[in-house]
Amino acid sequence: MFEQLKKISDTVWEIPKTFKPGMRVPARIYATEKLAREMDLQVYEQITNVATLPGILKYAYCMPDGHSGYGFPIGGVAAMDINNDGVISPGGIGFDINCGMRLVTTNLTYDDIKPHLKQLVDELFHKVPAGVGASGFVKLNAAEFKKITTDGSEWCVEKGYGWKEDLEFTEENGRIEGVDVSKISDKAIKRGLSQIGTLGSGNHYLEIQVAKPEFVFDKKIAETFGITIPNQIVIMFHCGSRGFGHQVASDYLEKFLSVMERKYGIKILDRELACAPFNSPEGQDYFAAMKGAINMSFVNRQVILHRIREVFSKVLKQDAEKLGLRMVYDVAHNTAKIEKHKIDGETKEVLVHRKGATRAFGPGREEIIEKYRKVGQPIIIGGSMETGSYLLVGTEGAMNETFGSTCHGSGRTMSRTKAKHMYRGEQLQKEMEQRGIYVRTVTFSGLAEEAGPAYKDIDDVIDAVHRADISRKVVRFIPIGNVKG
DNA sequence: ATGTGC
Image (cartoon, rainbow, N blue to C red; front, side, top):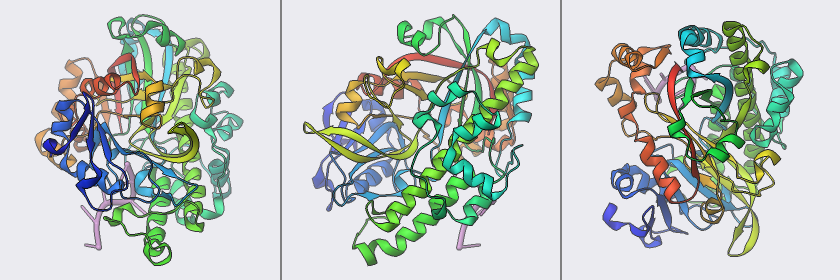
């Protein structure tokens, strides 16, 4: 397959429209040659299917961490023309709606924390429930849960689960407008009720990390983002909208399949690409329901941050304020948003699907808070639990080329089933501890699925987006403690 | 990813 790619640059590869009948635009893969050669073959199939969707603009994109997903590849980006016949597709957002990353600083160093590391991780493991079916400490009825879906993180600040300043460090200020609760099923609400403040499973995790001075690539921007001291401790976590978002996605996939062809005459190459015109009742209903899951996931991460602050305060016997437990940012990587982008010199409102892809807005965009606006938005990239993670910054290049988007993580290279056969969770935990990473997990099989070699090399992935200039390296973090979902 | 699958 690699031989069929047209090389645009060292980090951009194109699949022409002639590859498959029905492609409306070419597909573009952002990757180093090595990553492009090793790309899962399903990705080529899926990204060219995406290129056939009505209203798609410029290109169907796949980021270097791309791998096969439901309909769209994970790592997929597609912008739709909403003023014409553009569609919205749940497969382009993902089941885990608004799944994302949150990064929190401390004013502690590695030496400060080392004697307390195990206790911190053990406490976090107890205070932030993880695993399939986990329920949180927040007890809610349906009416209160509905309020969460409309009010987002503002609800948390009201209830004492967050600081007012946390809101401005969250995409959309932790509250996206335009939710219509009546478009969310009772079944989804019932599933979501008990899930606030829970991590989930799979590749969801909570990590304590170190910013070693040799891995600070841009000192000035790092300082702007709050990474200011050598060997500074940060906390990074990854989770989403749990069973709630999953149910919203499932409900609308089913609905779209029933109307797509019959009512709207849309023919697709894969039923996993179920979609509806954005400007149709069904499309609008999904958009209004999906936004409820966006808010729920912001609340989930906000409540988890509250628990993290409680744990650090308790173990280190100091106020969270004094420990400097402040947010760097909260970014989503499973979402679709209306944004203004320049296309052929003309500014247009488009619906940008990002599925396992992160917003990477460059300097000056009004969506970025003032504190960061001059440098570009922070981008939080979670690597595998054994390797490392990154803080990047958005660029003008991303605005010009990828609708302000970049990668989201390492990207799997091995199926979960294969990883489980190749690695033993118990042994992995021991090996990681010997290497200075203390891990707690709900299930050892789940830990084995997340073994480092089951993922692409995070440094290769970051190298690709950095060289393509769709984001730039700021800091690389090394894990020392991990609560595995 | 997911009260994990027909």
